[in-house]
Length: 116
Image (cartoon, rainbow, N blue to C red; front, top):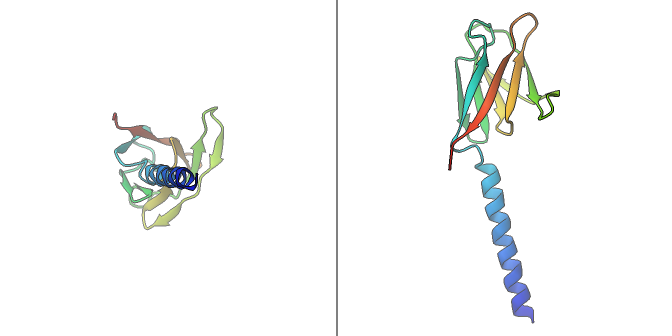
């Protein structure tokens, strides 16, 4: 009786490891598109995945925007980020982000998952 229990425990552990690996690598094969006015001061020059983060490179001298997560119902909530020079570093755990700064037109960064 102990052997089937041990086997079941090993299978459960392996399935958990696979789920963790998928969660960490979820953004592999994902690209990001920019929606908004290209003339906006906060319109990114480039967006690229890096490890578990997404780098959003802003134009030189661009103001630091507020970063908001757009939830399914349209509600906006602040989203954590760090800066590295003219780059915003955000966790790759979003579907749609909005960059907003005072009178500039808001700009959205949208996750586009590659077809499997």
